[in-house]
Image 1 (cartoon, rainbow, N blue to C red):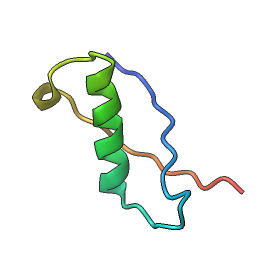
Image 2: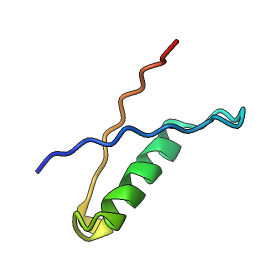
Image 3: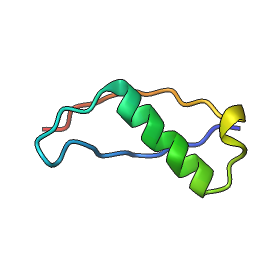
Image 4: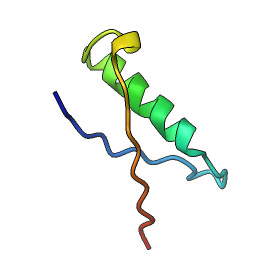
Length: 50
């Protein structure tokens, strides 16, 4: 199964890493009941919006 989350981090002036985005996506998937966290994986694509 594949699903997408749009995650926005760093609005407070910080510079989040790819790992920060992955953790947030996994957190959202867990909240949404997508499965057990140990069975989930996340792939991150970063696109800078101007």
